[in-house]
Every structure is written in C-alpha cells, then in structure tokens.
Length: 371
Image 1 (spheres, rainbow, N blue to C red):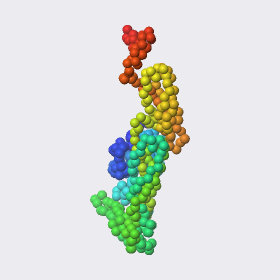
Image 2: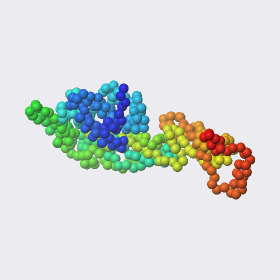
Image 3: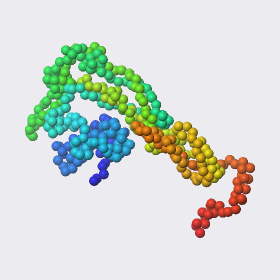
Image 4: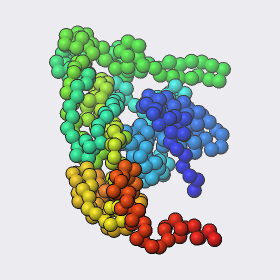
C-alpha cells in the first residue's frame, strides 16, 4: 500500500494555513480532479485524496491531532478510508459544481441556502508559562462578538408579520438562469439579488439591530486551561465564533495554547528532563541533593562513583496527561563539572590524593589501548 502524502502537501499549503486558505485550495483542486470533469486516469484517486485532506484540516480537533501525530493520529477517526462513507460536509463541493451541472454532486439538490446555518469558527492563540501548563490555570479575556439580537431573535424584523417571502425567488434564495451555447443549453444558479439568498424580505426592520439580526457586543470568556496541556493543543469555547446565517447559531471559538519554554525543565511527552551540576568529588564519594521538580524539591541519593551523564528517575514527578490519571516521570541527568576556583589548600589535598593512589591514571589506561 502506498504511503499517504502529507495533507498540507496535497493541498499545496503550509502548516500555518488559515481555514480560508484551506477552503480556497480545496475548491480549486476539487474542480480540477472531480471525476465528472476530469476524465484522465487517476483523477478519482486524486479527488479522494484532496477530499480527505480537506475534511481533516477543516476539523479543528482532527487538525490538532494530525499536526501532533501525523497520519497515526487519524487511525480510527473515520474519514475516507472506505470511499465516500465519511462524515464530510459536501456543501462546499455542491457550491463548486452547481454552476457546472445546475445542482450538487450526483444530480442532488443544492443544500438549502435559506435555512439557518451555523457561523464560521474562529481561532485565537494564547501564550502561557511553562508552570501554568503543569498546574493548569483559569483565564478570562474580552472579545468582540456578534450575538443574535435579543429583540428580534435573529430575524431582523420588527415582528414576525414583517417577514415576507421574496417574490423574486419565491423563497428559494436562488435564481436560475439559462444560457444557450453551440453545445446546448447550460443552466446555472446564483443567490437572489433582491433578498441576497435569504428567501425573505423584511417589511419593517428591527429597531434594535436595524435588520441585521445581530448585536455587536464585548463579552468576557472564562477559559479553564487543564493541567498537562501541550503547546499546539486547542480548547473549544462554544458559540463564540462568527455569527450565524439566517438566524443560525454562532460558530465556535478555538483557543490554541502556546506553552513557553522553561530555563531548566524540558518536556518530552508526559516526562520532564533536567540536568543538575555535580562536582567530581561528590560524584566519586556519593552525596544527597535536593533536586528541583515542577512540584517542589525532592531529595535524591547520588551513589558513589556516579558517572557523567547518568540519569535518575523520579517516578510520578512528570506531567499529568489530559483526561487521564497517569502522571509522567522526571529524569535527572548528572552533569559533572570541575571546580576552576580551588584554594591553595584544596590544590594540595588533590595533589596528595594523586600521590596516594599509587596506580596508573584513567588516561594512562586509555592510552595503553593504542599500543
């Protein structure tokens, strides 16, 4: 089985691509490779590949999992592994080919453009300190949002009797045009110019929102950041995204968390690593040290003759895994350092120690291996 291509490569995008970039690339490639348009061999395979990449990258949670784990993070996530049986929204594709075939894929009707539709999702980024990712934190911030008008409940009308069916499109929200060409009659649909695709005409507008159906507000968002969160993971805040259409609900707000680096602690998965300096004397004779962890100091026994680079494990002193009771570990690596500020007495003691050893040095044993 051929190895799957990177989804960003399939769409010709970088990992920093916005939802709008993804939609634009998808529409262009879908037009190019759709089997009803492109009869070249292999176009159906390329079309499925484009559709699979689009479905993954337009879903915030799937995209976050893919960015972190690649195709391995998609196992068991559904999608297009078995043809077109996935849960993708074919509305975009219907929009693309509506002008070609006068309808959606397979001759189906175009989706109802006059009904309530949820708004687009929004993405924001939040920087937090390393220690906040260990313990978790609660944060509040203010954003501008367009909420459904509390007076007209999103209709934009003064009363329900002020909402009439558009006479131009008869409430369909679309007008159909036919064009005769040497190849036959081509039919296309476009949003109604009188009602702008809503299928309705408002006789008397709501005074509070002036017919828009929405109110612009500043709202406070309370966000709970869980302990163990990793950089790049996203948190969802329902109904704080872009405004809905035709009385539909707002989209969701996704907060991408960016965790700052710590001066000493390094995180790898749920484990934490730290290097501690140790003198040659303490490494030789052994000692006890208070090692910093993200939860406070822990006493660690360094056994005699400990070598440079030796690692010690502190069980359960790593990061908490989100949605799990599992705790990672902390690994302490010994970094032996030579003191370059010895007193005269210390130098004399070291010299005396060298004379007392009465045997070849470590370097002399190493040198013999070359003979």
